[in-house]
Length: 376
Image (cartoon, rainbow, N blue to C red; front, top):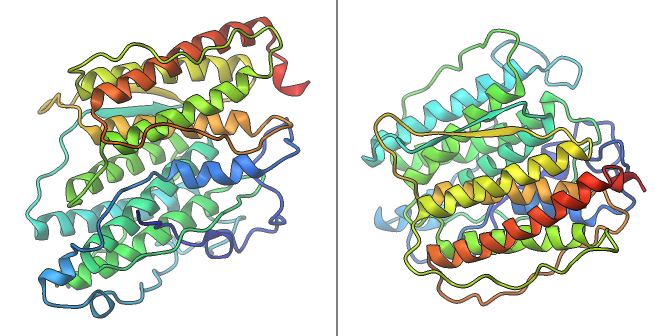
């Protein structure tokens, strides 16, 4: 398994005046930060990849010769300074669109089609959720660079400041742009793309949707993408966080019995079940006074096919939201999970997701009875 996320304590958030010990918090001020650090690593996603197959090896190049040091992209096209005070969400969107345009160059060179899968439309997105999506973008950029060049980027723990600004998301997106320039060079793509300035008034929701589209395009370029094995791990992790949240209620009834295994489940069925689970999470967060984005699944006009990658993306969103809620508690020790790591199919994910939905349904009942549970 490759661990491929850049060191971001300094590279991404180095301009922030916040002490590194301060992590992302809401008004609840959690006393422990372990779960929040791991949240950002997990939300970026996990990929099982083989070091034996890279594009560079097919070119007759060694990975070390094929991979260049990523060039440092320029300042925002708007001319604004790279600072918390001046950078805007419009600057972040301009850089995301530059990433998308670069991905399209790579897609054409690889002979891959445009992404035509279902679209998840997010609304009422908060800055923390935009940061989560940006980390997924970074992880996928590093994964693509690995497949093309063989370069592995070590993953390290990261911390983000209490008050999230567009600068923080911009730095993560900028970090994702560098690996794509290396991929372009390896593929022999020399055409330059001019970054386009965006108008003012860009919202985090618009930014989130643009990053989601880029993440879906990444999936069409991978030689080895996500599988049910990857997704069942994430759903199990979401279930573990939910169990820790349920422990806050003394009257809780244990919800840990795995539902019966149902054969032949398809990704679309698993996807629908996870979307239902997310709706539960959003209801729980809203009742607890934690703003949380709304998701709406919109089928593409040209394709209604839901893939394993679509299922994985929803699972990652679930993990990020539940880990964030877990991080508001006094006890935020990382959640331990255990499951059979053997070969998995969509039905295994469906089974694990069914358990998660049952847990969330119970948690929702308890939270509605005691909406102040996070501030005890």
